[in-house]
Amino acid sequence: MSTLVATAALATAMLSNCSWNSPGRNPYRGSVSAAVSRYVDIPAPERARLIAKIEAARPDDMVAITRDGIVGQHDYSPRISAMHFGQRTVCDDVIRDKWAATRSEPAAVYCEGDHCLIVPKICNNVSRVQRIGGGGPGGARTAGSQPAPAAFGSAAQDMPRAASPDDVAAADALAQLAATPAPVTSAFMSPFGGAVGGTFGTGKLPTTDTTPSSPVPEPDTPLMLGAGFAVLLAARLGVKARRRKTAPDSAA
Image 1 (cartoon, rainbow, N blue to C red):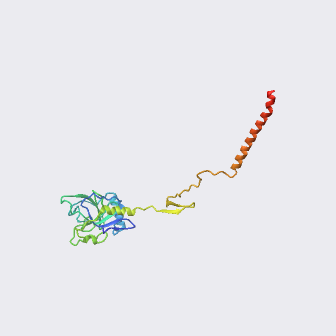
Image 2: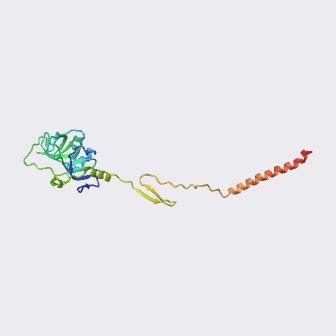
Image 3: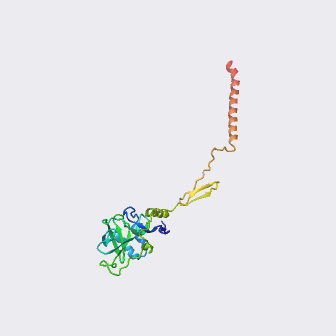
């Protein structure tokens, strides 16, 4: 995965060479807008019209992708480029050389000016394709037609087909991990001593229990208890004294 480049702003994995020999294995799971917006060489007004066409399912052509070409009402270069996989992965050059000669996958083509996008039905992998002979609906093959420039540089065009394709699944997993913000944690000293952990953004502060584990009596509590016992003792002694005075009279 030496060709992997993760952009910090979009957290997208840009790969140079990938296999599309198993269509549908890594379908695109992002939005149409996000995919088309990554084609920064297409003027913004044309990107907006392409997004509207794809979202409304209004293709300019319905084609069949085969191992060796793309067959439709117009002539197309057999090369498919800048294909979206997973949620955040774009591969500039995709190969399908291991397809059976009889295999055919339906796809929709959307064009604005000289820019065409192709969306295979099996995986919705928004990709780029070149319509040969110009951008108009009646465009025909011309002798001087040149292949479309690579979407993210020309290195992939010259890459040998024998090169080992990049691992799309691993690249997409890394891109999603890079796009996931990690919680920011901190530790600060409590005013009552000791470090207290916390998480920014929660709006909550750690609580500290200052209630003593066992109640401590107030300073005057022993005096009050002593006075109470003295009153009870005096009353008891008075009752006994009255009983002794009245005892001889009752005996007579």
